[in-house]
Image (cartoon, rainbow, N blue to C red; front, side):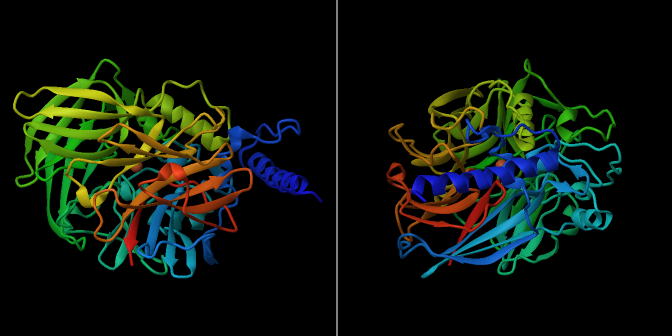
Length: 504
Ligand SMILES: [Fe+2]
């Protein structure tokens, strides 16, 4: 058999599994034609098929030697279980969380993945079906919610804290997991006063090691602020008034301030359990996007700003330059079209017409005059901004993002490339994984003692034709040159969200 035939037969095998499983899982799903040879619109959904409760430990070797300074573990979290019995989620963000550990050593990599055993998932395991709705899914039979942790799926990110890894959601408590075994150790409580309050999934660590975070309670007009010691123990918490904080995914910090971008989304629930949380959020296109600046010393609001309406999930770095606070952000034009796109991708359906590309931008807040401006940065089709976290609160030199290139089929949801964007020169350095691969968040790992931006990018990608996940290492200063080492797992992993690297 010639190489090309072998490749095709593997492709067809993989596609057959994908099309058949999608049809079984989701009902009527268009299948591949022999002429097309592939099903791009199912690329994203295919990663969630037949996900086991545990992966590994699996040993793999890299195609080239790992850099000597790069040893440690990439922890990643993401929605993994999308179906139980005859109930299924419609939306990527709803899936039960699974935490992965990719351990890099002198001889290769060991991968382990385990579901976060939340209180919710234990009850649903016993019932054999999902009992509650979530961010984007509702059920006729959904049970009433008595508190945020009833519906906590712990699926967004991780925070290394002390000896453990915390699995983070957005609207509930973190779950502690054993850093080696990934065994779930239980719901984590920082203090009696914050027991059960939301702890969001994008905590920020300042150069002193102090951990900052927040939580929002939709409709309450409040944000809870967390100031944690470097080992993750509570230093202090405070509730502040934030009338527009009905959905806040991320924030940024400087040496002195916490910066919250509050979207023109209004929480207006109708009491129905047949809809997801996103159906309770009303987009106010004529409203403003508010920016709150909070003093880290007092935890009081020091400044408020208004900008024209825009949407954003993720923020980059922020820093102060004289009177100006500069804040990096990944913007999108509107909320509900993006949610519709994610739902279609999750179900393997045709994507709705695009509403405009995501766009890197910089917000400039004048602390003296109260004037706020937002300017686009010359890099589009991006998200998951990362930077050298040692320089949190200081001017960014390199922003690293997942991105899209022309080689990604329009029918495929997600990113297929990695961009290093030089904030000093506005130059992009792009590595294109190609037509058949979806790129996940890649994380910067500094060279020990190196200058800002000197180090590596590490991350995973999913080849939806071959149904395999690959771990890649880049020289962060030469992303366009491609990976300097790669290791392919003998299986596919569900496409996830965020992670952190813990150096050995
Ligand atoms: Fe996020």
